[in-house]
Length: 181
Image (cartoon, rainbow, N blue to C red; front, side, top):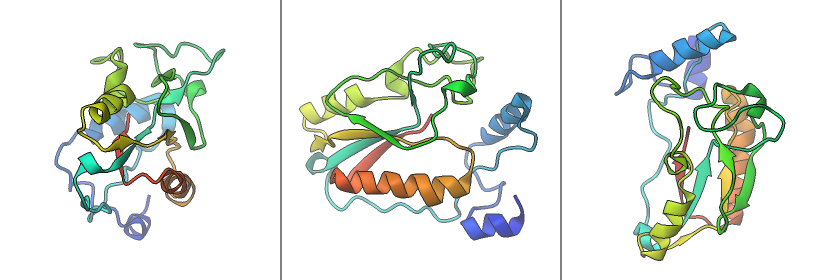
């Protein structure tokens, strides 16, 4: 990506990061055969706003990059190798009151040091429901939402994020917990 493209997105320079884990991830993607390293969306100014009231009074949604299980597309279980066939390419939603079979084999995670066996670390919907039951959040939004990891900033910003925002507004969510994998 050129400097003018990075500037157009408002990305901060590569050296401006608090934890240098991204080099290892970039190297991982190159090792998968993608060629040039992935360029992370890293903003100089964070496009988030503070909460306007206490979270225990708000409707909170969960957003995840975990994928629904796809039968017939290979190993997707904990400890599975990277599985591109398990990727999804459109925003999806599911009933927050139910448990779902989501997986992370399509994500470029550090498989040497983790196995993804604890589903609550990458899809904490049961924990969010428990937090609502304890009064720590006002309520859980009726749906959780899956956001694809297409590796395209343009698609993510111009298509996926707009669709996600529309769904969050439909659900009258006031805040979102993002479980990016």
